[in-house]
Length: 520
Image (cartoon, helix red, strand yellow):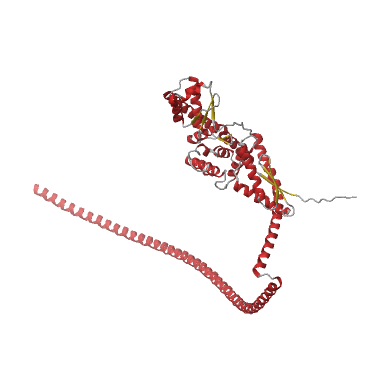
């Protein structure tokens, strides 16, 4: 029974396995078939897609080929057009060159023709020149025989005649030009100068070259001298100034080249006299104290001058030198006051001319700065002053204006001329400067002597304190036109020979008088 069951189960298992295998085989077959169908579909789809892509690629390639062809055609067309234009230009240039070559050939032929003609004319001219030269030589010989003059003598006479004629015509021309230009120039200059003088009137301070100290009594002279002259020697050694004690009642004269030292000596002596204690040690102490006081006064004077003129940013050493000018005089005119006056005048004239006022004032204030140390340094004070200004940082314009104010160097700017004019105005105004009678008379005699040395001058008169020279000439020897040249020659001679402040006017007078007498 069990065996039967087992067999039956085994048979069932085998049958089931066979059925399962068959079913599995059918399923697998179906799957394979489905996969084949799917693969066929995929292949068809791939072929369809590839065909589409191929068509698209072909279309794109055709499109690109068309664009490239269009671009190539366009470029080719442009290139051809450009080449055509160039070809036309070249053809035009060739035509132009050919025309020019033809013109050059024609010109060359014409030039050759003209050269031949010119050579023929040159030959003719050479023959004529030789003929004329021979004729001139023959005429010269005949003239020499007739006139009894050589060619050189005749030439000299001709040159003299031409020179006199040229001088005559030149004098007439100079006179005419001066008459045309001087009216306006003088009017403008006078206006500017008058304005400057009206707007500034400087105080005048007369300084003497020696200082005098008044004494309370003549007994003080002995105390100043001291035992065996010790006191006076100590004072002279400390101050560098000579003390002159003579018969002048109740006075001591201080003499020295340095005005600052002379002022120190004057103040020191006055303090010693008022104190009454006069001995060598005391003298030295007082001199040292006074030197400090004078130094402060010098600095203050320089600062005040700069402040009055509105000049700023100046080196302290220059300010000190300006202050020292307070103790310096020229023709008895105080140099510091003169410098301030020149600064104001230069500034006013610069204002009238539309120039820089502060620059002109600075130049005017510094123009005589060299006089502060000209007793210590050799050379003209203008050159010394320009070197000082350059050393202490002043501009090149200011340095040149200082050097040029007495024409030690030639003036080159309008500021140089303004400083010269202001300096002349300040020194030439009435009462500004004083000089000794002997020097005054000598200067007048020198002026008259210079003018009298010229030919044709009959009389000369120096008037207006030597600021005007009137020259009377002989009408038979000097013409009206020659008077202009004579005045210029006299002015040049005066400028070369004399030193003077301001300016000198030279007036040449020519007069013709016809005198007849009526008798009965």
